[in-house]
Image (tube, rainbow, N blue to C red; front, top):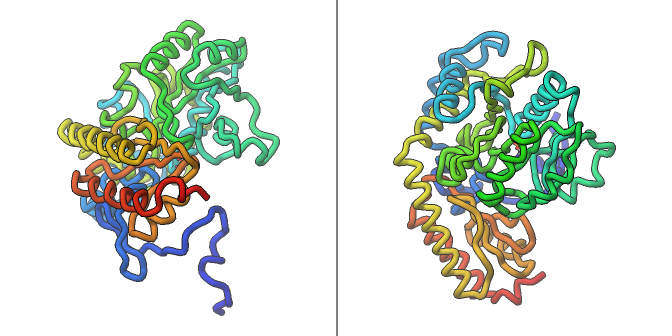
Length: 398
Ligand code: PLP
């Protein structure tokens, strides 16, 4: 029996969505059900590192789907072994656990740190995370997050998280006590509006955590997989964490995430961690196709160049319209608008066929595909210029 409800109502109403319905994507472009085309500088929230429906990923998925999808996480499968080995070979980590979302990978990182505390530090369990940080929407990852809007939600939170201030080492040091086991951070706070930890802070934080025997957990769910112009953000400051999480880009658009750890930190015992779909061959095939492409030095170089080009075009645009700084790294950048006009710009951009994100009222965030072209960057700048020129920044204020 067909019920008289609109399909929009059949989905739980968990966020304000525009009424646009997307039906097709290719590279930097999306099409809605009326045939209208959109230039996408959101890319599934920094997920589609190779753009929409990249042939590389589509072909890997199609071929794998015909061969083997899920033998069960209680058995090895060839693809997850190959991907785990490739991640270990290309990073400073020794062990990998595959997950299905960033939050699940972070939940695993929190469990791993607590396990490490139980085994090696008298049951220490507290994790120092950061104001403004975002680590996901499970109860523990919401508790680890420092997002103000999360504070009153779903009380009581998971205990054991204390919040320091990014780039303020003394604020971290002040929170360390006998119960502390780890420090967890995003090297660039993405959801908070693209606020980078400085290289200097990361170096000092590493030294501090070593001095106190604490694990350093880097949430690279947004910054990993080439997003900042290196395969992993930790390579910029040469600061090697004990635990790192990946998500978003690693699947090139499909649900895949990973928890990586050094041999010393990887202390899970049988029964501690697992999940039905973890490391399934289908998603790992996508991850392997992505890593083989994104991990190429020439790919990373061109993503880094595209990031510098986007940054300089945004700086010029900002100067023309009296806006603020451009911050971030590689292809994870934000433009400071100086006024709360982000939502108005995003709405007008959508009408004009351009997808932009405003993580905070006074900022726009840019996270295009890593293979975005200069022409697409200029098209986006042109679209933004039109909005700013037509309305004038003052008139965009709600
Ligand atoms: N950590 C960071 C830094 C993120 O940006 C996100 C998602 O935006 C997450 C964790 C959560 O990932 P997921 O939405 O895949 O659970």
